[in-house]
Image (cartoon, rainbow, N blue to C red; front, side):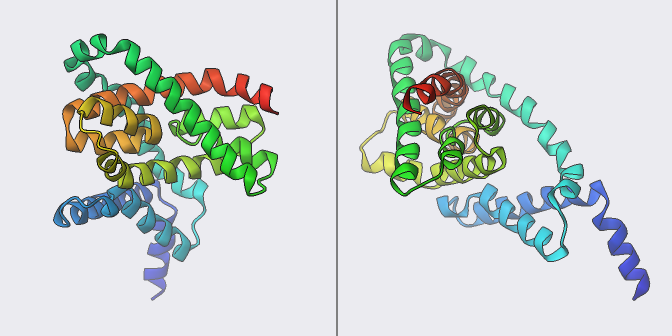
Length: 238
């Protein structure tokens, strides 16, 4: 019994254990997603998060210890984001033809994401730091956290809101677009990428390459637009 306990103490403090936990949790969640017919509510990111959180809670492991292993996956976010340029390059002729429409939709989507989130939080009595934390929730996490900190928000809360936004967008975004009668793949991709950044883009890529390309473009440009517009807008409103 003591040997088992000593082994667990060693493993729980090992970066390799938490890296393995992350990879296995995602693989299991992705297997369930595929077996379930790729249903939106079986989103593999959501499934993996629930598994990892459950294990960390049961074992009393703090985030800093977990991240010693998970940082290797975190590092791969950069190359994964850059790789989105491949489907975008294949659709570049469509991007050039729709440049004006893309810019208009991105600016409108970015402002709508900011104002709707802040408006709901303000109406429900959110404190200033909560408003600043929720404002960049539709932007990819590193950019959103930097913006939140600049506005006086809580970067850790912003990170949670970004993940929740991405998961909800991937789960319900296609359903909303179907109800709205949006059938063009480029328009669907732009909407998903603007509203739910990387997680939504990954879902768009699973469905259609054109949608994935435009979602990746929207994700990058929305991060840029929000980083430029939000501080100026914040200074005007508060």
